[in-house]
Length: 416
RNA sequence: GUGAGCAUAGCUCAAUUGGUUAGAGCACUGGACUGUGGCUCCAGAGGUUGCGGGUUCAAUUCCCGUUGCUCACCCCA
Image 1 (spheres, chains in turn cyan, red):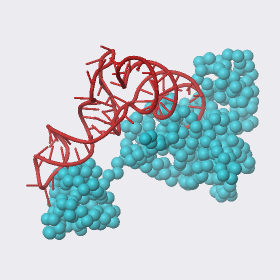
Image 2: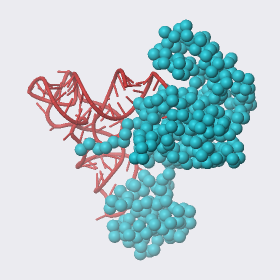
Image 3: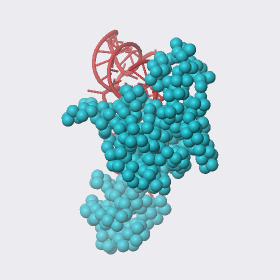
């Protein structure tokens, strides 16, 4: 009999790992609170159009990675491949622009992309996403980048690299785009096949190509920086100086081009040296024309998304602490099977007093029960006929190996 | 979508140029210890060797197919 397995690229996070996730998401929540971001819950599926228009028709995500289906009402629905478009949609739909600006929002949950799985890449994966909507100020970009760095600092991560670039705006990007196409024209035939198709659709991505020929060709290509308009240049300078002032070590990389169309001005990534080739723990930037792309008014925004799987992988690789693994405080042991109802009652009483307690349900020997106690708990409460007659409980400290006879009340007081 | 490697007990791995009953450690269960875990010893349970086909007297081993996993390309979190 063949068992039905989890679909390719998905996985179960079991008890030996889920507590680590609880630790990481708890820190995410703390940092969001400290930075003044409010949590929102968003739908896991949206109208397909939101992503086509928001993320960009020519992006890989939209072209070949979306889980799209028709629902029973004939609507085209897509499992969200990212969160920014949904965030902006929610901002517009709920008229958050009428409230205090910027609206600072965060959310965490599963995303879906149809890709070949590999280390740090899954078809269902969890992202933390934070967005500040409604402000153009470069200091908001600074706050967002600082947020991500503070998050990783609190998680204990090291060996990270922050990479920063500006990709311009609707005013200056077309100029640069043209200059780049002009430059590449003469050696078009030498470009790799994918870059040939990028030439018209998204020439900036050619800068990011890893093929040696394209790398060589683009070596002397015109730089984005030289083509930024005054506003973008000033924005970038202000952010750079701000990062400098907070002591952030940042590598400027003019070849950093995000794969999603909506980015303007700031683009950044944080890379981990302890992952495989999927080495970005976080990516983000500014997207001042995303709102208009999905039919809204002009709303500037900036944010980042961080992959929790990659964060956990990096933390494990670096031996970071995940706090304390939860375990039972008390394991209650029945000496004779006849007293099992009494220990059941004791377990209930302990639990009702907020003391985590457990017992054996397999009818096993006392020795085995003690073994479980040693594995799963700090203390054992041992009850047999003797204890019932004397109305006491044998209370054993499993770490010290010492034991004493105590009343129920004193045990509760001791453990509370 | 392309390429490479791997698939044996719950987990980590053995098994001679193809050879007869597929082993070990950890974990699990019971016992030595008839009311006490960790250390030690003994025993037990646990497998259609991913699946399907082929070659052979004989396949965990060789060949083909298939599925899955892993890593890389691509792209990104």
